[in-house]
Length: 589
Image (cartoon, rainbow, N blue to C red; front, side, top):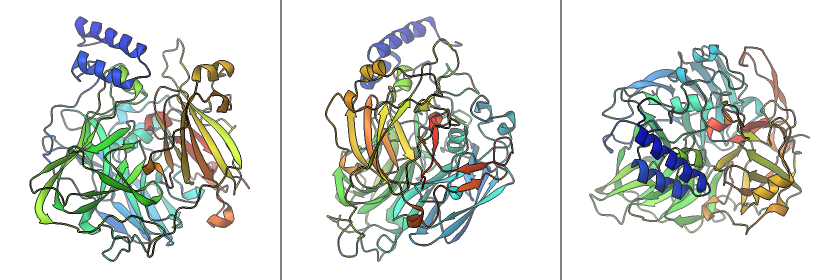
């Protein structure tokens, strides 16, 4: 390894021994990395030193209407005042990220999407060995726009095989079936999602209704206008020339897939460690973890409490007061923060102290500690009370429905099969299957199912189901040694999802209070079974057939028209979904 001294190599060996001996304790691994490398592991790439709070937090523009056009474009973007602009992708008129789309419950709307990209800012990092990739994809970027969390007909879901190449357009039709909620849209192209999202193809969709209108007369007493602020959180590694590095460690050659890596600078709405002036009052922050890999434990530096009033699928029945939230990739939270008790001139930071996942920690990664700063101004802001309820009262939406009993129990598994002596990168799988394998889940329309998601790996995996929302029931530890001893895992390509209940080895932990409500993504912890309850809707309820076939058009990695069917479920660590941790599923009649 170029530039790696003998002393550093010895220290690396020591760190590897520590990591091996404490594989269940990322906290110990983090402490070891800090002690040995001072947070600057020689195995990891690092951003140049950058002072925080040099840039104001950008406010993302808002677009609305029933006919929206959105282009993906190549551009140049400066992430920090001390960095030159580097190559990026953006949606619409933005050089990075996309505008916030406002839609209305019950109102259908169309989105005409056009791919106007030229090349790819991360072309050298594209791995040609991944599913369906060819050299053509370095220069003619395949894209697929997915409205994450939307209740959407299959032909408008942004299927990973329904590709839109440069010069091509596609129109999605959205029936407006979602409740008021904070959704987001992002690229979902097969084997390219991590590349295109990291390059900038991300935006928010805020769904409004008669109660949560986003206007001054909203019946929930919520902050509106300048006091409602979307926060798109990411982390990155930057190069000195201002370009982005998607590579995290030197052990993986450029152009080869890596299992995921943490960044060392926090990015909010496209700026590194920005600052925002806040009035002395209540703010509503619509937060999305738009990162590729890391789970973050978010808190305010003065440890002041805040309120979570909603998550992926919409509002909670009642606010949950807390001083931290653990947010995995693709999860969203709707948060109220009251700056009214602070003095003018006080500074508060949005911070993170979650240890990196096992793979990154073993290489010396440490938590990326900071996202942004809030500066308290003298003036008064939005003055209002945090309500005791946000559902069920006068002028409020109905209470969340009671959790129904499960009619079907379904076990599914999250795996990282060993590559053995092979030098190839290990695959990441669901049910031990490749994306193209035929043995997929086919729940019946109208059925309530309990999915028992068994995470057999040493890392968390946020699992996302397209189309549906679910309720998180909780998690319990699993005796993985016994589970895998009694049920040996076959070769990849043979379904492996043994029943898990007899291997549960500890108490069942209910989800955090802020995890209640309608979810579309759930974080599954290492060595646990996560139980979720899903009702799969019928065609009559939806107004469209969720099992309808549709054409990929000119999509396909090789330009061959194909007939597609159904939706997808996958890990939302984007590196993982790009290397087989994604499967199709159908909701059958």
